[in-house]
Figure 1: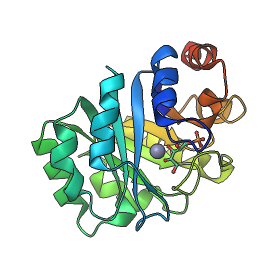
Figure 2 (figure 1 turned 180 degrees about the vertical axis):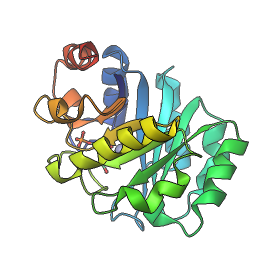
Figure 3 (figure 1 turned 120 degrees about the vertical axis):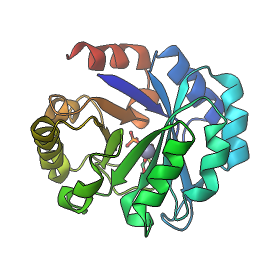
Figure 4 (figure 1 turned 180 degrees about the horizontal axis):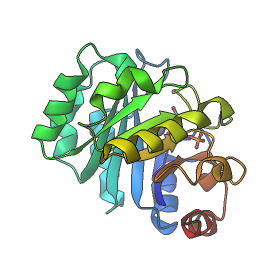
Length: 212
Ligand code: DX5
Ligand code: ZN
């Protein structure tokens, strides 16, 4: 299991959150970029993300909750970025965004909100490296996991097996010791902010990792 530590929090400062994830031995640092348009909240300008990379050697897993992903791709591809994930619901032409991330040599993720069905993104499954299932409405940390998205992890895994696709399955929102067992057999990566930032992050990451 891969763990992507999200630093989005209204309780812990960005710097402390980055330190916490460093010490917890997460695989990636998950950066939630919000533009105040695709979602209500705003977070992390390009400059702020550049600044926070001074405190970490972790590879970045960037989650763009923005209407215009193209604006961010150049700058984020200059950082130590493993994945750039954008929202299917945010853009008119997902192929254009997929190609422009790939052209920078960065892995591409495609994310769907809780009410978006997997069949809507089926034509992109052969082209992306990661699918991010949102298990809360995107926009803030600290919300409860929605059981109603569990079936999507099962469908995606089945489709991947049948059609020999290469994407990994990631899930984001409300991941903790109670929700984790519900999805652990179907996903390759989990994102977590508030659960890890509330103490004993290292042990929690270890126990997630032990599961397979
Ligand atoms: C929500 C963000 C998440 C958020 C997760 O829109 O995409 O990455 O930080 O926070 P928790 O783990 O607290 O649900
Ligand atoms: Zn996120």
